[in-house]
Length: 260
View 1 (cartoon, one colour):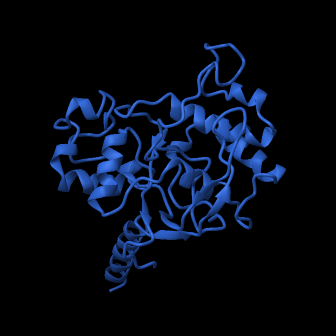
View 2 (cartoon, rainbow, N blue to C red):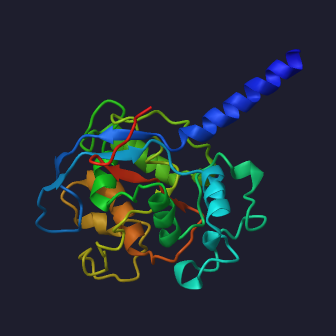
View 3 (cartoon, rainbow, N blue to C red):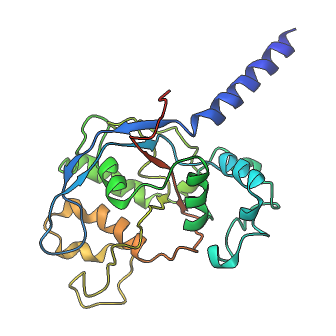
């Protein structure tokens, strides 16, 4: 009898964990100054939107490719995914068991976009992502908090963070988790901002996109972590698949949604 009870409890936990991934948090909009490079910067308005609490996991993406065979690794159109797409999967339908509760990576922008759209959602815009990501656990805008910025930079220095289990970090002000210190994330308009050697104003086009060299010319060093993200995005192409790049979905508030 005890064994039956434990089995039922285990199945409940697995099903409950699987359901967690699609839950969304309401992010109340407002105005903020995004980091687009160096020079004059203007406030932009971000409207209310929903954002998934956690990044999409391997388990969730595995269910997606089982339902939509065109996104399986042997069947995907090469225009929409490079050779690294799902290359760590055992086969078309089976992701590594050890990664099922980890953030899905090795997926292209096209695949991430399709995943969200099949759920009636979309990828967040750069402005939406940055707006939600500037929140700490207690403040909706913690960019001037030196301790908060230091913690983000430390998280970027940690190795193999893409192997962390999703949903284990503290939620930020909006109730969203793992926006820092896990994986980079695709956005709807990831290539709308291009940071080049010239835009960083240092004349060195060989400077690494991932070292945020452009932050030298920023108005405030609190922009350093943001430069890393913008530089990362500007280095991408839509068919790229990286071990450190995942995604989460967003949704407009005028679409019906039940928050759990």
